[in-house]
Image 1 (cartoon, rainbow, N blue to C red):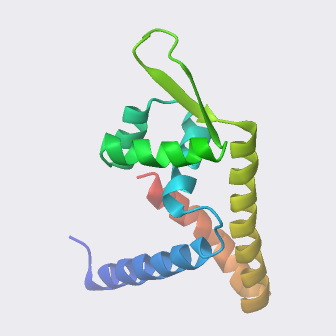
Image 2: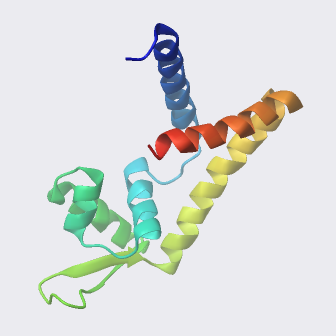
Length: 140
């Protein structure tokens, strides 16, 4: 059972991370749901629409709409499944890779600028050490 102090830190951290995440997302030019699909395809490789829907915990019909929008923009392409002729795989197009990198660059650029402008050198060191700890918690 966590102590009251640990529970308070957890609440503050969750709240702060949520606020920071929402603020960074303001830099996006592509809607969040679509960026998420692009990111999944980039990290995990080609997937079916059903696999994407399961990964994002949405209905296949909802994912099909998001995929359709991405295909209309030329960010995702469809190809035949190598072992199941009834299925097709979705993957990032070269334009999709470029758009995703631009989104990531905008987010990272905003955050890097905010860190430099808002934090002292000592605070930046503390933040760098904290990032390692947050990664460790996320991997649990």
